[in-house]
Image 1 (spheres, rainbow, N blue to C red):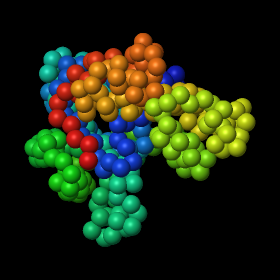
Image 2 (image 1 turned 90 degrees about the vertical axis):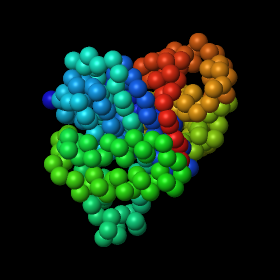
Image 3 (image 1 turned 30 degrees about the vertical axis):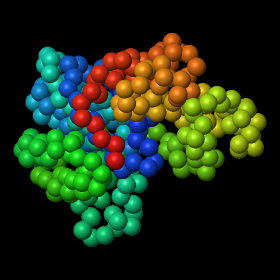
Length: 294
C-alpha cells in the first residue's frame, strides 16, 4: 500500500541548475518532516542512525533499519517520515543528478550496461542490502567532500559498483506517473523564460504572449502539463533558486527573497514553508553540513 489518493505531491524544484552535474547534501538532523514530493532528477539517499523511519517510495511503504540507501528515479513520489524513529542525531547524505547526465550514447556502450539497467530499475526505486551499504558508506561520505571532476568520477564509480551489488530490491510496483514537464516544446519555452526572468515581476499575459496564446489557453496548458497554475510554477522556481542561495551563501533571508523575485518577505516565508515544510531559517540550518554543486 502506498500514498493515499488524497495525498498532495509537491513537485520539488531542486537547487540543481542545467549547468550542474550533481548536488550533494550532507547533514545531521533530528526529525523527518519534508513532505511527499517528486522531481525530474535521480536521487541517491543515504541515511544512518534512523531505525523506525517510514520510507515511502511510489506505492511502497516500510520501516527502515539502522542504515538506508535508496536510488529514486525521475518523478517517482517519495519521502521519509518520522514514523517510530526516536534518534535525535540522524545523518542524511543526498546526491541528486540530472537524468541527462548520462546520455543514450554513453549508456549504450557495453561497459555502461550495468549502470543503464540500474537507472531503469530506479524508475521504481531501488534499495540496497545492509552489506552493500556498509561497503559503500565511506565512499558516499567521501563524495560529500569532493568537487568538480573528482565528484563526477566518484559518482560514476559508485553507481557502477551499486549496479553490480547483490540483493538489490525494487520498491514500487509503478513508476512516476506525473507528466514530464520538459517533453513539450511550448512548455520548454516557458521553462527557459522563467529560468532567465524569475527575479523580476512576470505577468501571466507576458508569458502567454511568448507562446502567442491567450491567457485562458495558456493557463489551461500550464495546468494540464504541471498540475499547477503559472503563478504556482513561477513561485516553485523562485523557491528553488532561493533554496540554493540559502545553502550556498550567508546573505540575509530578506536579500535572498528580494533577489529571487519576492517583493514581500512575509509572502516569501509563507510560500517557502508551504513548499518546503519548514521555514527559510530552519532550512538553512538543516543544510549547514557539507554541500557541493558541481
